[in-house]
Length: 170
Length: 286
Image (tube, rainbow over all chains, first blue to last red; front, top):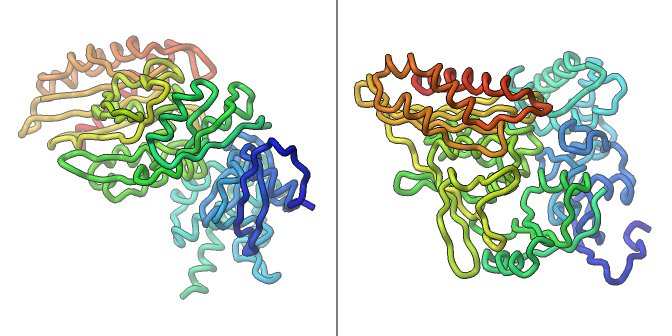
């Protein structure tokens, strides 16, 4: 139904096609529609969270062409011809990503609200820097906020995933 | 919630200028959107039209030419923090860019947008003033150069005319031996005080041949502080080092610091002095 939503004829729409978790999506969006609302409300993927709504907390982090962006402050039309990854698309055919496994093994979350953003941001980090120092990790991740005060475990989880991923790659 | 607006997607600077001229205050130029969309979501501003400029070619490159770096206004903070040309020639700007907001803002926010939005709590303008950068403003029938120093008029207000588009930021590469340093202090991601110093020494590093000082964030707009520069320029390194505290007090008073959630006026003025001293010594040690 999402694609056939009724709209006033005088309302401008932008036809966009993009890849969402590896699958082609084609839909019409209005210029003011936010990526967060399109992904959550129209496409039904609720892993991405609305929280601060001002690009400070990182709960709405998505990867666009592999780089982290705040879906809460991204106009949906901006992802046309691009590739979007949400937490729902991270596992490979049911097998969890090493970052997901590491967050479970090392207790990298409590309530879980920040976790999709944490894991996607750290994926972007490890994709560009597979062996980060703890300082590099903190610098990259400082814009992702956890209110359960779980940073120590989160850092441990990401470092463990980095080690695992680089030893597998070798 | 964002209210509806119409999207315009011009393909040339001339077209942008024409749209801005035609629709005036009811249209706004849109690049990264990292600041504009926040203000629109809050309902603080509303525009009937956003003019998306990201389709304009050639405005997202960093080039070196004749002793200057030319930065396209659409370069994102992420592009600048990873630019090999900047790393080689203006490491102080790279360091500044690495510390703008957070990784997601740097991914989409542009240098041109940052300057044009003229939010007082922003970093780049202050350093660009001290570096004596020049900003190119274009419109349908011509272009002009605006010194960074006179670009910022007030909070959220620049010297751009309604139909002018910022296209390029030209930064002269400081002559050696020189040092460049930007330091900021702030609560969470918004800087509350920023200080930039560009110092040129004579060949045996005993005299301050030239110095530029700029302060930002504390007041409505970043600014150069010539009266503080005068306390240090042409002085021996020893005398300049003795005068730096006075230059800091002068800069603090000149900063037009205002009391707000980021700190009280006298507190910010004091921080200006502390940062100036640190930035001066850091620049000297380069």
